[in-house]
Image 1 (tube, rainbow, N blue to C red):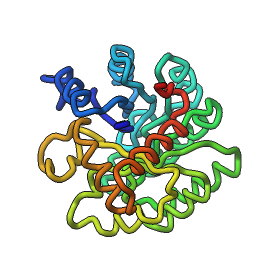
Image 2: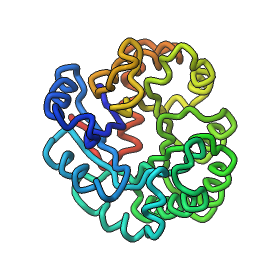
Image 3: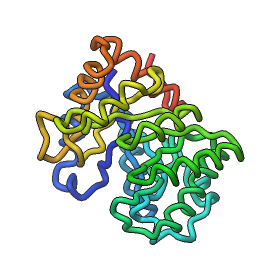
Image 4: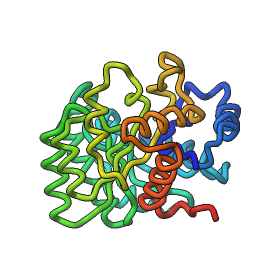
Length: 260
């Protein structure tokens, strides 16, 4: 069962052919997609996409790039929006110290509000982390000690030590098209050690198109290339990779009903 756990169909790159992109995904065998919220100013669009399609669900959250514009965000705001139908996760949220588009202290403060919302709603937290391993590890440990929550380390490309810490806290991990890139052996090395029952796949479209589509706009239809690469990395056959990632997805995103 092909599932794309992280799509950005609200992005302007899809404004000219969004419906066609969704249809191509279905034609390629993609049966479910999770449309990801990156800021509250576009959440209405994100939610509308989910509401318009039986096979699309969504999250609510603020990407660390956008944290500077949401410095006063409260967990309660996220909790209230998460009550809407078809909202199945909190995020994308986290820390990005590569671009530093938002001040680091604001990123951390906004991220902690997302953690609180995930803890109180029971919804999985979709985490973005880049070049912030030590601070992310500290926050995850502190917040988890204050109360358990479920988390997904989305499009994971950070270090092995943070992956180990997150795994010990029960995190799931999602693998993206980066795993197919020739120079990404360090990413593949971490993937080999991820918990086998807590790995899912994503495109993060329109970004990070996998080989053989690298350099083009990414689409949910390409998620099969990610699944194939994951199977190769882990030494699974196609059926095992499909079963494992499908089971892991429904275990994490448990508000999404599993088809009979």
